[in-house]
Length: 124
Image 1 (cartoon, rainbow, N blue to C red):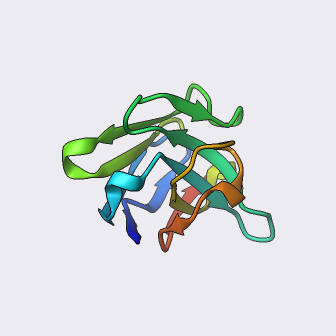
Image 2: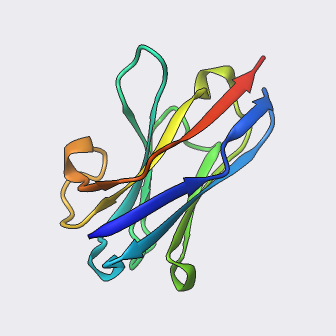
Image 3: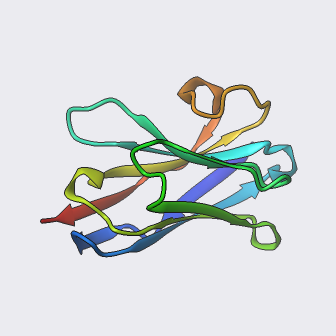
């Protein structure tokens, strides 16, 4: 079992920055990668970014590339999502998820454990 808790969401203005945290506990040694996903009202959940804590390889959706950065502090079992130049279109509930077996890190069904999500609202 792996437990994930996100934090850091909030209400900001367009152009501002936010940093989300995803703290993992439990059998974290089994984590192959941590992904970030978001779901806006009336839309399907979509991939945002992912990182492999061991290799530190990162992956990004085209819509956030160059603005968002994901990183990991393995000593704290925490993954971060630094979001810069936020746009109203980034408004969504952001969730982190743990992948245990590799595969396509952009695919929702490759993630077994999910956090509860944190709301990010960007006003224009």
